[in-house]
Image (cartoon, rainbow, N blue to C red):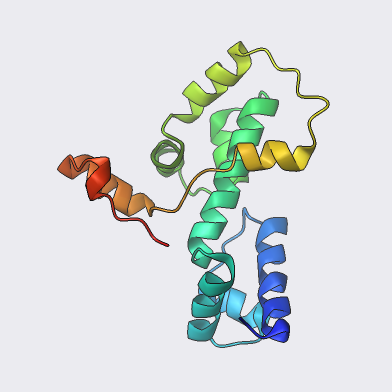
Length: 157
């Protein structure tokens, strides 16, 4: 169990990432927000939240992009830039790696499906649409390239 003061510091950094997930959040910047060293921050963040800081930020960005694709008619390029992507190609590849479909396919599927979610609390909707990033994107790409089946997958705890 981690020190409550350290957890408050880590939450401060996590809250900053949530509030401005489109910004660059290198470990050094997050460590400064938390008032700890970079190595201590990275190790403690993963211990506290179950994923490394970069993967947490990627999850937030993909969630935000999926929500914008579902709920707006903004161009995909604009959504990519608003969620912190540096290029449309990187955004599309990462989005597809994480969600299993392209941004355009997600938008088309969501627009075609009838929705009556007005009475469902937002926190439940967010959790239902949260991408599963227990496996690193680079690991997923290696598995697909090598043709590994599910029994050979390596997941991060």
